[in-house]
Image (tube, rainbow, N blue to C red; front, side, top):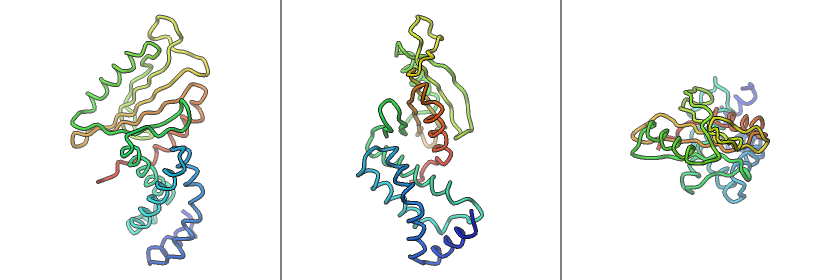
Length: 210
């Protein structure tokens, strides 16, 4: 974080409204673009952006000035988007066949959720399980990678066409009999662009405390 931004944040902490307006003006355009890229809905975008800046203002006093500001800001933004997705009980589409959704299941365990997801993938004749692994990047979770098959009867022969579907699931550890699941859907040609974008977004992911 630059000295200029650190001084700006200190002024906000002292109650300077003009300083917060400066911060808002600095981040609002990129925030709107990011949220609209997630929701593809103008009304929902401005609701999420508004709530994000309200949360930033309310919690800025707790922000550690020795740490970068932008990841902290993006964490709040992602949490607000996640809260919206749970309220709407629907996916957050980016565009057709490319989206990320965050859901929560109650009264279950990580192991039970993993088995259900695997059963769903295997029940789809056009999909197979490409990989299962434990990861700590971009978040700590169990990962299940489902991928489209090449059309043969071999359930381990995966497609290589540009439009081969990819379904990536992050299943987080059970907390209070709740499991958070992040599902990313894209296709092979979009793996480098949207896959990397999803990865970047999740670097700031954190479960919001209720």
